[in-house]
Structure formats: structure tokens, C-alpha cells
Amino acid sequence: MEMPRFHLARDGRSLGQKTSDEVAAGLVGQLFKPTDLSWKEGEPVWIPLVVRPEFRAANAFRQVPEPALERRREMPLPLACALTLRETLLGPVTTFTALPPQGSLWVPFLWHLVLACFANVFGLVWAEWLIRPMWESLWGDMIHLFPWGQIYRYMGYHALLTPVLVTLGALVTSALIHLGLMLLGGGKRGWGVTFRVMNYVGGAANAVLALPFFGILAFPWGAYCLVAGLSASHRDASWKTVLAILFLFLTSCCLLIVGAFLAFLPFTQDIG
Image 1: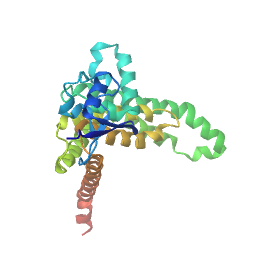
Image 2: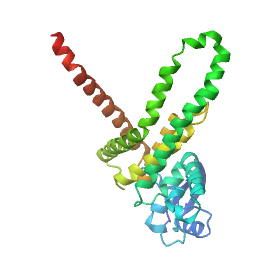
Image 3: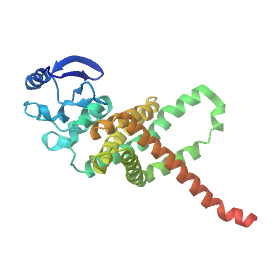
């Protein structure tokens, strides 16, 4: 009987086709990583090697938990934070495939909260020291038409409300996305994994948002990292995560419409 052959890939690059014995030997010799993706004929999706039971005897499954904040006691905290930022933004698939199913909810939440506060405060600083002088040089006397007082007031209020906004956003957003995953038959590693991934990605996206001129990249890159991270951590197909995020968007729109209707309902009754 011919041994099944696995197609292997890492970071979008093919590693060729290998038999199960060759894969096991490659894991032992560290030629392959537990997070490498594998596929064999008849399977609907690519599966990380770490998930396949036939390779658990192959030495390789001493999996290092990631992001680095998951093993913060093994290194200085600043180093763990820097590594977490790099791992989340540059390798979300590998990073969140290695996310332990159980772990602290507080650590990723505080990571998100601290970086969101930093992004808002830093935004105020570089708006005054960098953006405003640049606009003044470009627009001259026309710059006085800009409502700087209202802009700073809004940014200040937003900075003060950041802890409340991050807390509510993390809880509500993770709950709705996880509900969407469950409706599609995914999210089987639990809401805690969804919550942790969203906070790790949210914190990293806020770090990018704080960078002058590069902040615009925070939203598309953060969306990619979120889709990749949730798919990898739950071992779900990417389309399930995309639809779950779409479910969040549609639900949020419906709630906003209902809220606006209820807010204006007393005025319509007065008019009537």
C-alpha cells in the first residue's frame, strides 16, 4: 500500500511533497516546524503539522507558546513586548497557531489597553508638533479655517475615554465575532482564545496607528492579522473568520440604526 504524501508549505512557500515518514524525520531533525501547513488528497483545508496526531511521537512537539508575552516570565518584560509586537504583525499565522488554548485574559487585555492609550496620547503630541506646522507651511493663512480647538477637544475626550472604549470594544467585539464563528461551526477552542487574539492584534494595530504617516496602515494590516490570527488559533478556514467579522459589522450597523431610531423617537412623537 502506497504511503500518503503530504504537500507542505510555510509562509506561502511550498516545501514539496513528503511521505509521513519523511515528515516525521524532518520534524525530528528540525527541517520542518510544527506550524508548517500540510495537505493531502481529499482534505478540504491545510492543517498545521502540530494538529496531526500521526506526528506527535516525532520529538517536534515541544511547541514554544507565542506571542512572547505568553512566556513573559522567561525574559525581561520589554523584550517580551517587543517580540510580541513583531510576532503579531509579521507572523500572525505562526504566532497564533502556537497560542496555548488556556492562558491569562488580563495580559492581552492590558497589552491592548496600554498601547491604545499610548496611541491616543502620542497622536495629540505629533498632531501639534508635526502635522499642524506642516499644514501651516502648506496652507498659509488658510490654516486658520481649520477648527483646531474642536479637533483637539475631540482627541482629548477620546484619550480620556480610551479605557472604557477598549474594555467595551474588546468584550462586545470578541463576543459577536465568536458567535459568528460558532454559527459557522468554528471557534471550537473557545471564546477565551478569540478574546486573546483580538486583544493582541488590537494592541499591535494601535502601535502602528501611533506612527506618523503610517497610521493609515493600521486598519488594513490589523484586519489581515485578525483574520489570519483567528483562523490559525481556532484551526478554522479563513472564510469562516471573514464571515464572522462581516457578521460583527452587520450586527453593529443594525444596533446603530436601532439606537438612532430610539434616540429620535421622542422627537417624532413631539412633532406628531
